[in-house]
Amino acid sequence: MEFATGALGTLITKLGKLLKDEYDLQKSVKGRIKFLTTELESMHAALEKVSSVPSGQLDKNTRLWARDIRELSYDIEDSIDEFLVRVEGTKLAKPHNIKVLVDRTLNSLYNIKRRHKMATSIKDFECLVKEVKERHDRYNVNNIVASSAVTPVDPRLHSLYKKVTELVGIEKTSNELINMLNNGDDKSKKYLKIVSVVGVGGLGKTTLAKAVYDKLKVEFGCYAFVSVGQYPDVKKVLKDILLELNKEKYKDVHNLITDEKQLIDLIFEFLDKKR
Image (cartoon, rainbow, N blue to C red; front, side, top):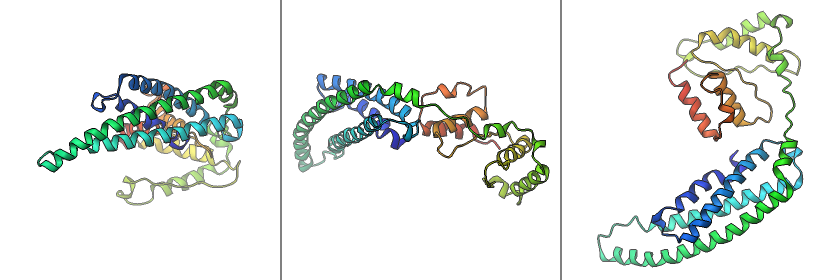
């Protein structure tokens, strides 16, 4: 997702940092920063929608628009990082001798020039963001994404609800799989164990995995069974896991606006000290 949305996630936070009084930016510059923040937040949300649609289903204009936003986000972030590093670097030295005092005085003068340069850059970025916004409106990106984002039914869905008795020999095979998962001493059971079930489509792999899951889940304090496609939406998978872990607590998780790290943190927090 980081690639899909460029630097927008971290950039919005850094723009907010520029509004602090310690950076002594002019009121007009802060107004432009607030405008940039609002527009980039909207673009971030739009890019997340675009990233949820397979590239082949997007028209060329939308792909170009998404590329331009990502590249612009990196340019803005680089400019802000350079400013923050140079300005904050002047605060590190302790004024314990004349040389340091002179250096800090000179740096204060340089900071005036740096703030002026930052103000000019913000003004330029404001113009570029407006241009990108106009293209967004012209190409009607949100409607394009909405019409493109028709998700096909997961072919494994039927297998999840297929009667186990319909699969010939599943009892023996499921017992073998359970033995593989349980194989080892008590110490090894504390660690993650992965067993792959492979084969061509239609053999009943998903039905087998679900049957084993249903048998083993009673031994655990929490559990989840989640289907993951070849090109998964990572956020959806993480939200599905949370919902499976606790349907009451996370019943509205799919309406939650958050990033992958925050979702992973929620999963770790829930799983802490649980088997």
